[in-house]
Amino acid sequence: MKTRIISGLIMAPLLIVLYFKGIPLMVASFLIGAVGIYELFEGFKKIDIHPNIFVAWGMLILLYVFGYPTLRKPEMFLAWIVLAVVCSGVSIFAIDKHKIEDALATLLGIVYVGFLSYHMVMISWTALGILVWMVVIVAFGTDIAAYFTGYYLGKHKLCPNLSPKKTIEGAIGGVAGALVLGIIFGLIFKIPIFPHIILMSIIGSVMSQFGDLTASAFKRKMGIKDYGNLIPGHGGILDRFDSILFAAPAIYYYLVLVLSNTMDIVAK
Image (cartoon, rainbow, N blue to C red; front, side):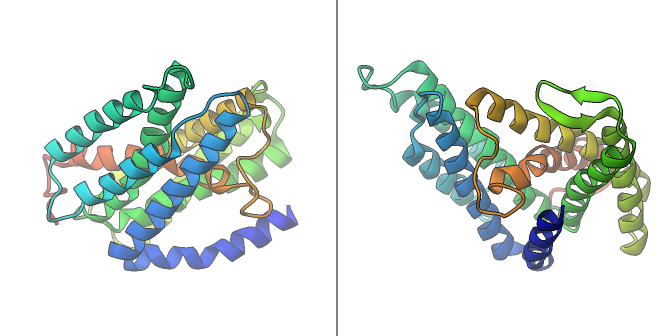
């Protein structure tokens, strides 16, 4: 526990990028995506699946080019997804050296790590860009609250085959903790959509836990404990940011699908 707390404090300065947003946030999100893809692909190699890291990194670069404010359009993202599918398929043309799984794993890394992490940037470019803070608060708040609730009160296993230490009590405590932090965040910053903050906190917390469990499922299949050792006490980038991969899209699409009819969300 001590190592986890110290590592968390070491990572705290990274929150500076949330304050500046813009280019610093883009760079941070890009690095998280690039390192996360590498870690995921190294895990796949443990089970004799060999994704193409260069195709994945190339598509990640194109995503940030297509998504730049002067270029971004819904059609650009659709074109990027189509190109990601095409390039993943082309990457196994040497069929004597590659398997179908290699192409599927390449595409998974591009979308699961690259595109989902990019939603932090997408949130920052909305009229409510301040909610990038909420993604981090909800995701990390869920993790911390679930950990301590499960540690002291946990009795019933949540998904013993995926993560033996997680409990139902911890999951509920995680949602409760995220809700409290979300409400405090909304009150302090006087968010104009405050009633929706409650729903976004709950949805973001649930999705962040799904993100954590999904990453755990991959690790179980790969036969690894952590994706890396970059962050002492936490493992790799994916071990620390797996919950954000699901929480960020949940909050972004809540904004554009639920709130776009009541206020100008997308245009900043």
